Image (tube, rainbow, N blue to C red; front, top):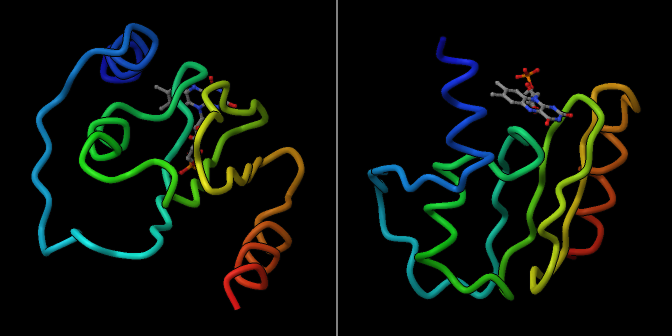
Length: 99
Ligand SMILES: Cc1cc2nc3c(=O)[nH]c(=O)nc-3n(C[C@H](O)[C@H](O)[C@H](O)COP(=O)(O)O)c2cc1C
């Protein structure tokens, strides 16, 4: 049931309550890693994105094989997909761009 509920919440952009530990304000750049659920960023990560400027976020989305549709305004969007086995490549490319 949890799987279907999670997919329903994600597909319908349902708000969820999250608790953020630590201070995340004022960073120059953020790296947010989140799973893809039903074609969208998982609800908790989507909720967190409301509290930081999207244009400062390097988004890293892991999925089985689909790419996230909402890609606008992020500093970068990086797709890690299980079928491509591209995790190491995506992470090292992102790290190189941060240097
Ligand atoms: C509710 C739910 C919906 C998902 N929807 C998609 C999807 O639409 N496309 C996709 O490629 N992967 C989908 N996935 C797979 C997750 O993106 C994948 O499990 C995630 O990247 C984490 O990887 P892990 O399961 O190896 O920890 C879904 C997973 C869950 C739990």
